[in-house]
Image 1: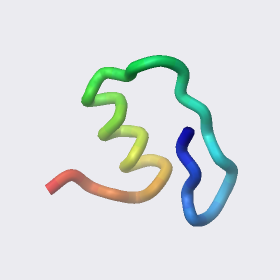
Image 2: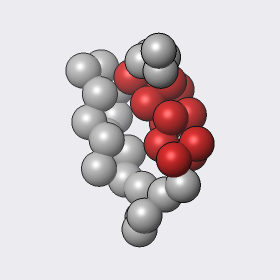
Image 3: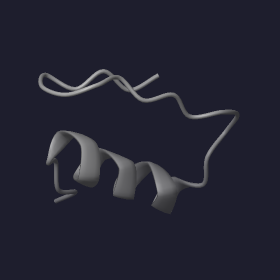
Length: 34
């Protein structure tokens, strides 16, 4: 369950591949991996 500071929470089912997690964090939270 992703709950960003702004906008709607989004649910992700099951275990996601690492690249999908990184994309989700970038898209939902605006966080870039360093």
